[in-house]
Length: 151
Ligand SMILES: [Zn+2]
Image (tube, rainbow, N blue to C red; front, side, top):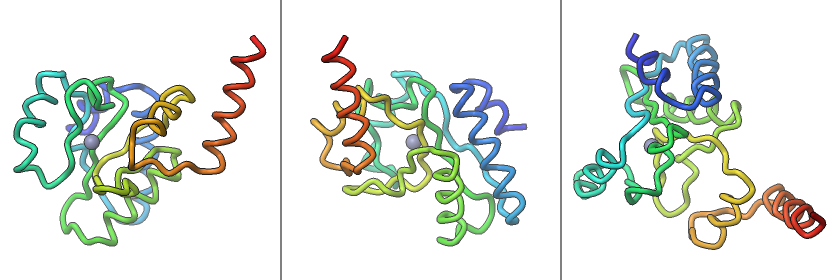
């Protein structure tokens, strides 16, 4: 199975969550295809060089979670209604994944990734205009700082 080949190369926790997404979506009559999983930095660089021809945003090489096996792109199979895309996003978020459909500057609807670590979240807030600083995010950062300062 094509999806399994892609899932076998990525972070096992992400793969498990994607399998649960696939099961939940199948129960809703929606089949999914993993259109992109792990990427080499060379592959990311090639995509970045051709980003003008890509309907989705492409991260700079060295900065994509695809290069670490912590991101996948998933599309509904068959008719790509906005309803099906929204359902895929909903099930991904239900599995605790960060959905590119929520990216503020430029949504990336097929993209799902593991949530940031505390450090990654702090760096993203410092660098990324897309970030939404949620109450939960602030709480986690505050907790992280307390733990660092007390250690
Ligand atoms: Zn992606």
